[in-house]
Image 1 (cartoon, rainbow over the protein chains, first blue to last red):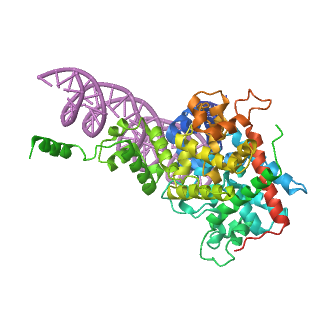
Image 2: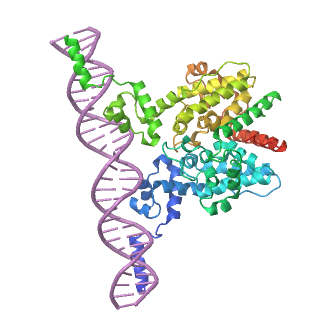
Image 3: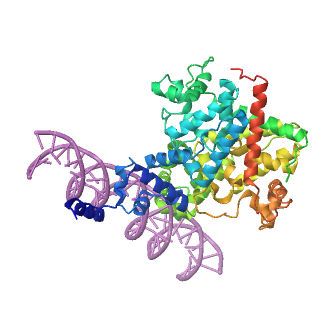
Length: 248
Length: 248
DNA sequence: TTGATGGGTGTACGCCGTACACCTGTCGCT
DNA sequence: AGCGACAGGTGTACGGCGTACACCCATCAA
């Protein structure tokens, strides 16, 4: 046994084999939330799960909020990327059902995602690529914008709050965290990289401001709400008139 | 000054004038959440607001969960009752926009309502009367059932989770709290008063079980999801084909 | 007069997130 | 070979949380 080996052996005894990293922390957090519920996920409990003292976690995540951000990105990353195909309806449908499957796998995720104050990169990426499907399907940027709003939390699995007006659903007093999807492109290019990284989102945000209300800084939430509402009511009425019935 | 008056004066000095009751506690809680955000609403902070020691609150609410239940009922009670009129679309529209206005007044409410494990009476009442509008508008019980699901959280302001499959969004491990809207009528009449109190909901729940899957105990969530999804996709495609554009 | 009762009080416990100081093993540099 | 920086795990401590439990006291019916 060389001295190196001896040292390594001793090290293995004192530290916990794999030296813990952000990736492992996030994975353990997701697993813990899956099995014991999000309410039971505390820094202390998570540390215990990793055979480590609570404060050790803070070398890998800044605080619990950032942990939740990381968990969000982890599960959103599980959603299948958009497939290829000529039929845009089929493509969105598949994507959204994939998102749904992911959220069913992680029942805590919807609540956590909606509680984030700003959209995480993975969420932006997801929204952007989803918007892209509509655009490539021939919907105008204008229509795509409203369509994305209309999908709401149920169909995208989340996203609702990302587009909402600043204080409409958050923890109360938090001002616009300068990261809402609309404000990405609304308040001028704060980071020139954003528009290139999320081209469709940038386009959508721009589409809601080329009118007269350039100063608004956001889109008209009330309009979006009524748009979705009337779209559904139209659909309901049509189904009623044609005597629709579920084929159960 | 009579002895009674003296006693009362002394009492007023020691106790805080109005002797605190559930009503006052709930109103103060709502006000506090409105002004400082739901995260800052703690039993201790609320007690302080009422010039009382924290434990005093527990004489009026069992615990914090019940406090949140009470707050839920309070805000849901602010929603306008359904109006009268021959045009059902107009009536639902007005109602839902009223709900939206209430939720905008209390930005914390949507999150709180969705976090309740079981529906509170006021929520059931709201859902029931809303379902009633559709029924009187000529929609079948079957269609109304799916329509209610399709509305999702965005349009009803909440309700999503009430219909969801037990563990799909809650705090993790909690089993079906035997109070989901579907299970109200699904698992036989647990309380004979429920069906009379919420006739439309009872009817809707029944409509999802008269088929072959009597044993299911709940409706097919996946079906409801795809129903709403396809309804929206239909609408989107129609708008695209007719070259729809917002009149901004 | 008295005893029950409703409602406010005080103390204490066990959780939580996390600031801060500390220690130790590793590695690049001289 | 020696040394300083640094990455990463540790230990202690603080303030806040929800709430159990024992208490006190004013009111009022009997």
